[in-house]
Amino acid sequence: MRGAMQNITIVIPNWNGLLLLRKYLKYVLLAAGSSEILVVDDNSSDGSVSYIKEYFPGIRIIQRTHQGGFSEAANEGVLKAKGDIVVLLNTDVCPTKHFLDAILPHFQNRTVFAVGCLDKSIERKGTILRGRGLGWWEKGMFVHAKGNIENDTTAWVSGGSGAFRKDIWLKLGGLDNLYAPFYWEDIDLSYRARKAGYAVKFEKESVIFHYHEAGVIKKHFQTQDIRDISYRNQFLFIWKNADTETLLSHIFFFPYHIIAPVVRNDFSMARGLWSAFRILPKILRKRASVQNFWMRKDKELNIRT
Image (cartoon, rainbow, N blue to C red; front, side, top):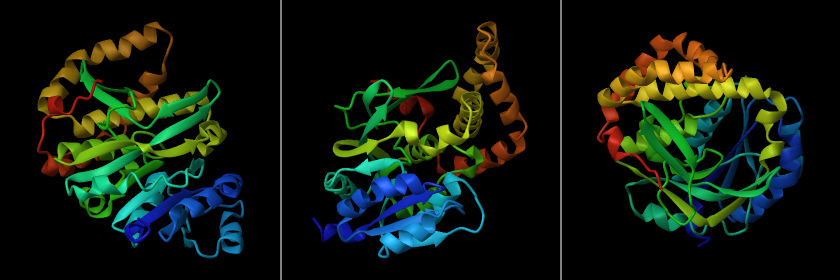
């Protein structure tokens, strides 16, 4: 198995994650074996790079001169990775020692684009088992939820704890920075891959621990801002990826989706809609480019159980 790992690169996008690197990077090194580890530093100011150079000199570092966000950092890491299989890990995850072993067999099938890990998410309510996602179209909206871990199908693979085939990633254009600063970019990439005829899988035997509450997003963004961005990116996803049939359903139910939250005094969706509408020309250009890869209908891609 160690020989097979020669073809893997573990990519860790980092922005001011020094405290997290101090906690978890040693476990990544332990699990990596002889695989390459590549940290893409997104112009940190907290000494992250100096720390890695001093304590982990064998780790390759890409230092970005401007902060471009997670998607840009991840895309650059995949592009410059030496491995054909790229494992993306957030700075706030701690992989178990053999988490790579169960991932590799899936990639013997050339149609497999990505494999997601079992994410033992440490949250206020306790440890929640995540990593397998459900996703389906309902009244013109794409709904996503946590799925049962006993099934290996998944609607998406997380950009913070998943393995990806490099050549397909590059073919599809990787993560779309349109979703910056966060959320929906990995759902978008997985969906585009599935719509292009590739498979994404979930592997419950590949385990990582995710200390979600300690992540950068919740430290630097208010809850309302996170909700607004999430709703904005949901609209971006729909307008970019929905086929004609789904888009017509979206338009038909559009008044309902806007009015219902306002009645509940929840204005996040309305603010997200306005933010999305302001960049509609960019979305339509993206839509025109991704349509070249469409091989499956939206209704074929629903995963509800």
